[in-house]
Length: 171
Image 1: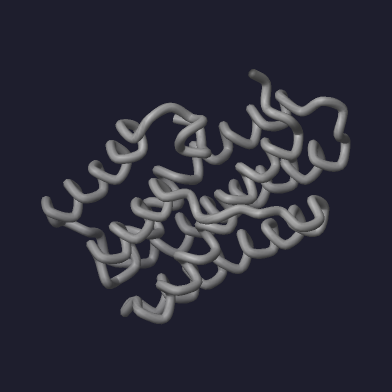
Image 2: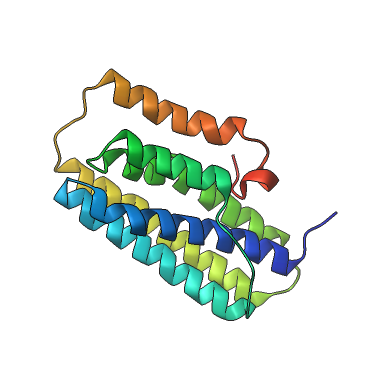
């Protein structure tokens, strides 16, 4: 069964909301100032995307995506500096979200506004990935096998959790 434009948009909105909620709640708990600022800025960017999409949809009823929320919360819990949650956004979630946005645009049935919103969101996602790289380049390298293992587990969690429909983001 082919999802409707509204179902597609609500799925993407759930991704944005999840990112916005988890990063917004987590930023003040982090200890590295550069990562605190970057986390707030990323949360704000996805919150703005959510607001714009929510306004287009009217009164959508969406909740956080459990597996996405779990991955982001695990990243926060695994590293109080904020490096791991930003890694998750730049290397695990962001690329999958970009593919989901492309898939969403391709699956739409004649909704130019949604297509434009998804195109704009792709640009925001790329901008946030690049900004995270810029913030990280001035920080000390992480030479910790435990951290590296946690980083790999985040990707595995998304990949094993199921197909793109159950995750809300593409693998």
